[in-house]
Length: 628
Image 1 (cartoon, rainbow, N blue to C red):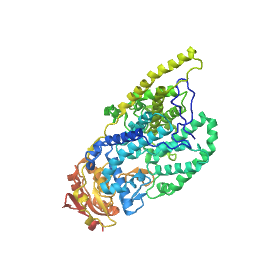
Image 2 (tube, rainbow, N blue to C red):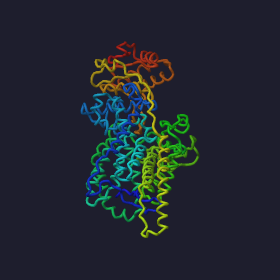
Image 3 (cartoon, rainbow, N blue to C red):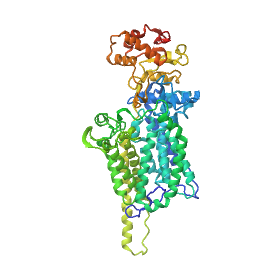
Image 4 (cartoon, helix red, strand yellow):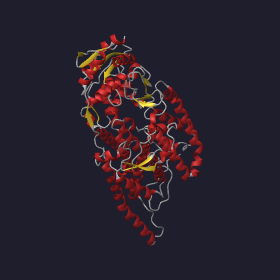
């Protein structure tokens, strides 16, 4: 199915709609090679990716995200997991190095295996901190680059239009927001290619097998990068294809056979390649069914968020974020971009099928992102949203977060920007044929009028789009210092105390609330020792997904003492439970490093399992005599 576009060389006020693509590589014509403009565009995206990650590079070994430090540490741990799996030739779909002794189902978590495994050599050479910062900036730039490439080859003629839209799609406020500790949501570089491949299915007779195979390979790989973004893309493609079929039923029917055949090949190949990992995700060890209480279903996008400037942009205000940004900032376009997008939609609606499709996507996914209750300026109203009528136990739906559906709106707005810029550029290129009769004054007057309009439409269009996107220019992501692991850990002083099959228990035990420093012990030592607890989603006793490991009596005591700053009165039952917990964790040593609550934690652990010994820069309890 060809990508429907408007021909920007025609006068937008009077030209008939054009629905064929401005493909750069039609059959029989040599493929267009990258030009200097292409290289400059890609280079600009790379520089912008470096700029966004600048605060990390200042001290890459000792800085994490200020907004999501625990997520940042989790992804450092994931890069170490990829390197560990490659180095030891272990199954990357599971890890026993966190949540000992039960382990973690990596397919049932955000594991980014499609990137952590190929980047294993980088992690082994430079450490997960460098890999994280390098990949984060590279993923932002790569998403902008593939968006630019697809737009310039398949949708618009103006390279400037493709550049502006590519920059927006790669560095939109909602994308940069997720760059704060969630690189999986900026890893969207395959999605523009997938969309174009879907739209081209059946466009070339006799090539449905090839097209299906290419699409199947892309989809299979994206599953190992971010399944959620792939699902959003699939939903967007469904709406897109249906809208095209309604708008162009004859063309859709003509290509339906080849489209469906290629789609079947692609879907079958993707399923074949990912059948076992997907089975493992839902049926393997430590898999789960849904999230306890459907915790994400109330996370809808606030209506005011659409016209508000995001925190991480030059026009953003953190004070506003505290009012309406309680969940995620997936739109946050600012009012100038909303006005420009609406104006572009109105002006291009009659003559541009892609604009109409983008408009439908904006409408559908804006409504879908609202959630079960409409939120306005930080207040949850009594008005029901679409999700109020959707059962929260439906497969796939049970894991969805309504606000993230707004990321499809981001993509649609990016396409509108490209179409609007390209249409404005078309005025400058438009050449209206001269009237047949030289004496036809009316024809001459019409030609003069169109030329006059072209002289002001082009600069006004460029200025409006530029002024709408400039306030969204990203700031460098905020970063905060983090203490390095103890020298005892990084220098390998733990090795004599942790034989094979046993566990090092760091204090505090890693968790989604308390586990930032000690989880990094595992990440920065290459997973050389397993740890209990951790930061992940795993099953509770009922098989529902919960964040982190269920608390055991000893971990509960540790967290309570940390929160209160005091050690409770300990009983013999507490001491018995501590020994039982250590046996469950297969512990051989308990280690306490520098910590704001170090004195309290040392007093607690001494009261539970006896005196500690000072080894290097940590307090250490060798518990092998206790647990056997």
